Image (cartoon, rainbow, N blue to C red; front, side, top):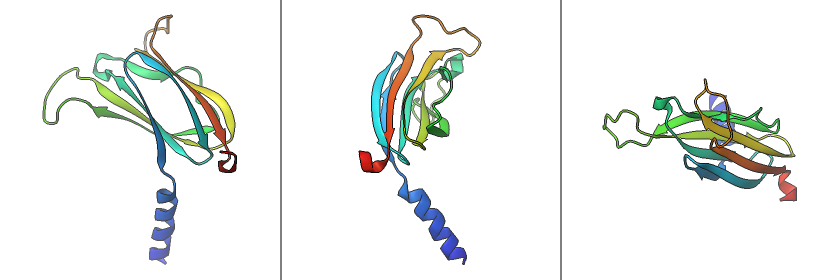
Length: 133
């Protein structure tokens, strides 16, 4: 019984995989992504959270997506003690429903208002059933 539950758990987690990784620098950018329902993707963006800066969603995350994880990975050499070194933000999503939408993030400090000229990430999404791809 335990072996069967473990096998079921592993098959569900191994069946989905990250198919796309979209990377952005501090200046942001724009991309388009066409994926199927159930497919996963990762957005990577350079950030400097130790200085208070981060990537924040503009509006809400589209209903057709689920954010699975949000993690920061240090870009400083291992075992270095560099203060203020940039990090890479990794946003891991899964497409849950069919839709066409836009996912947007702005680079700023959370206590500052968004203003013209702030770096932004814009991803135009097209999520379809896997038979339509």
